[in-house]
Image (cartoon, rainbow, N blue to C red):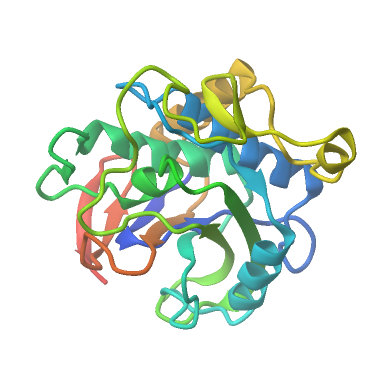
Length: 269
């Protein structure tokens, strides 16, 4: 687990970039895919105020293949051909840390007001709202090592793209409905760990290796520890970045550079 990052690039609204550095092309391992889904479901189950209609999220190989194909283009920006898919991006120069990436996105909840469906002025919330968008139930991510990432001066960057269906961040809508967990689950869903889980037969369930039924608290602790370590000051320079998007979105695209550990806004991208 990498403990530090020095340069943080944050891209607002609809797009999220994730970390990846496994193998020469930065492909996500099976374990990393599993952790990605587990952490999404962990944060979705623990939203505050609680959600009445939060669906359980699962891995989707078609979305993963779509995300991987775009990551291989090494472009820092939204996929204009993504159609009806949400999209999250994250980039980093010095190694994969999925819990850290998830913690960075989730940390935006501090700036989001569910009742008003607004983000604090000057802050970003689009990554968080996509992660906890109640109607989103499928995620697929792909990563690639880019010697040159178009739109970024840094070189040798690991780029990760996550796509979501149905997409979140729909203009005029809140991420989820506040209420008693699972009280608004649709027909065909049961309640599991405060999430609405599709009712499946035994054979169908076996075909979903990344479907999470329990969200281990150790992952949340690990994510929090990674984030704290990253803020203490890096041992070597790194670039992190996140961007969130889906069709028709609330927030406009804003890009900025954040320098750690002093969190100084260094410029507009």
